[in-house]
Image (cartoon, rainbow, N blue to C red; front, side, top):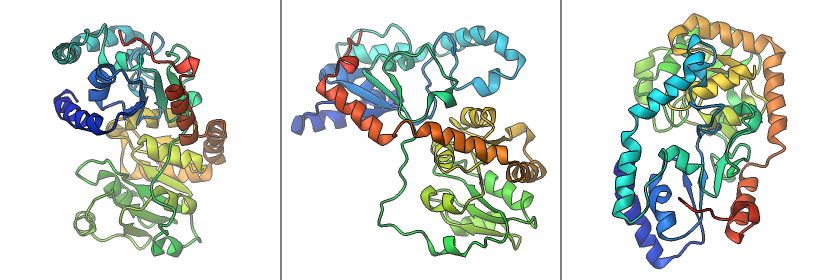
Length: 350
């Protein structure tokens, strides 16, 4: 993240020469505007998280993103010690960030870069408090706006195969999404575990994957399983009785929004935490890496289909979404920030 800041600042400097923005909105992982540009140009900065839970640390949650590892294990009692150890181990990051800020004539940070993001005027989380443990000690800049979902333009029609998936049996959609490991582990597991079961299964390749390569990797598929290229979630969810996925925030929020229960096999990035949150809400089943097998996947899918509580809890969370309007709410908050609404006035960066 630090290594790309110089390039970010070069690009943004060129933009500022021809077009002076009244505000900046960026992802929490884009550190150029966060660490330098908004102070250098004296422009309010808003952050839009790509994660459906807030990753800002707080007294009640010193290691956000690690609940899946700590809360249900003996390590929970050691959480403050682990947080302190992690802070010491990663101390080089704020040091490097402060060196960069000094080059631009800016004061050093008093804490970590992540903590600093909580000082921005607006920190948008595309989720709801209920899905994030109803945290009560976050800064007032943090606003849960609900899912911000978009995957295609309105003029794009669903692929023809969508209408050909039989309805005689439950339909299971297995999706890799847009961020996935090199090896198609999820698709391989589903191709083995769900083969020859009374299910209609669609394996949906990750965005950008080659179907030819996947066909070679997966080998012959059972008659009840078909492989298709990447397809927008808005086309897939109307035909899904259950979704099997890794557990990224976008996929989970989209499924909940359509009342579709899930089986999640988390692997990378925010997937373990989001999968744990979903399991805690009983809107799906999480299969940790150490426990995954074709047999466990088949059992989990069967259970989600058989027990109405999973779909019911997904619908319950979707009702909570309705209290927030996602991108519309985010846009209104951005407008308030730009026009100087008292609750969102730009704060001192120090």
